[in-house]
Length: 182
Image (cartoon, rainbow, N blue to C red; front, side, top):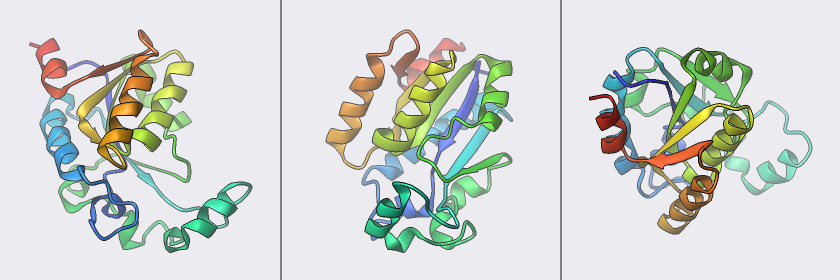
């Protein structure tokens, strides 16, 4: 088993469905990477879900005005984890923010000392989570081939930005991470 806590960010239908305005074109590739990671973490996995707030406040009002389709309750189909991950999700964390670095995730990670991130979207929710966790002093590993962005260019740019935060944030691959444990 590898060390740390794995946070699988927002592997939800709204990002998997090619017809969704928020579709991540490489969702299936990120999902394959996540599948390879899961056995190495056992029960030390949190799946997150981005969900709309009941009533958007502040700048979120303009955001949801641009994305009115997303103003649905947390139990709506678009917010559900994809079927393959719903079956593995013993611990699910919902947040109405891009960043998933919440007190709940911090409690899980503190005992492990390392946060490993995978999921979507590299250039939004993964990035927001990584920066907040790094600011809190947690070692963060972002698994590039278990993440997907809004597009390939945004994915690559987000990885480059996060890698600038070394040694607080390190970009790695599934193979490199799994090899560390052997």
